[in-house]
Amino acid sequence: MSKIRVQNFGPLKDNDNWIDIDKVTLLIGNQGSGKSTVAKLISTFLWIEKALNRGDYTIKNIERKSKFKNTFLSYNRIHNYLMPDTRIEYIGDSYNFTFEEGNLHITRTKNNTTFELPQIMYVPAERNFLTYIETFKELKVSSPSLREFRDEYKNAQKNIKGQYKLPIADASLEYDRQNDILHLKGKDYKLRVSEVSSGYQSFIPLYIVSDNLSQSILTKSEQTPMSEDERERFKKLLSDIVKNKKFTEEQRRAAISTLPARFNKSSFINIVEEPEQNLFPSSQWEVLASLLRMNNICDKNQLIMTSHSPYIINYLALFVKAHSIKQIANSEQTEQLEQIVPSGSYIHPSQLHVYEFNDATGKYSLLDSYKGMPSDENLLNNSLAGSNERFTKLLELEDLCK
Image (cartoon, rainbow, N blue to C red; front, side, top):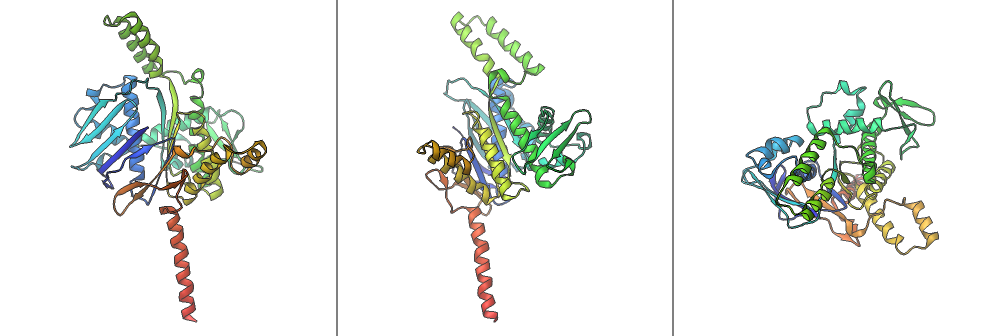
């Protein structure tokens, strides 16, 4: 399991705790508390680790002075969050990273297992910009991360064939290839996506990109073809192995056999900002169920989310509970269970971690759980309780006024 610890970076202060990155990881807290900051750091280190294993960069190249700040942190626009006493630690599957005193240090882990490349996607909160415009030519995106998501959104659209069913409001998508227009269709309407509600404009790019990428790694036979650059790197690495006179024949065969794993993507790591954005609670349920189903397609898939929604955290508890019930239910009870909570979206109790971010202290902590279910005593539920307390005080004041 990968993990990260962030100290004195942006809104985050001197944290001692680690954040374990599990099958499902949720980051909750007030705006400006550091949730997205950590999510972007996780995305950054995942990408660097992938690039090192694929041979895109050497350790020496990435450790160069200011490379981490000016190339990798600036990609997600968090380079100005650095402070003189910033310390960031990330422990990955094959590399460990420590940033301190302005320098990044990278070491290989002692884990000798073959690193399998993940498909990494950061789904930004700004995704609805991509659906509001009529054509991509209208949008000049200065953010590299949003440009990458835009390109994946475009690819996902092109892969739509016929009626593409959505999990909310009995709606579907239809892509007009000739005019390059995406339509939303319902029982008695057909609209351009640029004309639909903000909820759809937020949900559609999140859903079709996540679905397209999760499907792309289902089997190795369905792998997305290598790019020209990847093919050239593959040929060079293969040539280096063949020409290496230090290898025995057995070592050479072993090295060649592991080479494809450095290019074929075998898992999907989906990092989603605010999956609930602009959505009604029942739609939040459907979106979360869909993201979990995609996450469960492959054992090594991971879903990392940031959220302000009390519904998201409470719904996660239901998916954990459903998993526990499934283990003891008979066939008839299982059918009843699946009518309540859709199958394929259940969460093993040990594979969910929820972290709370406190904007006042700049610290984060692991939320308590009961049998894997997030505690009701969390920041989001407490906010709802605060509303009830205010209403009680209003009733008391009303009585005094009579």
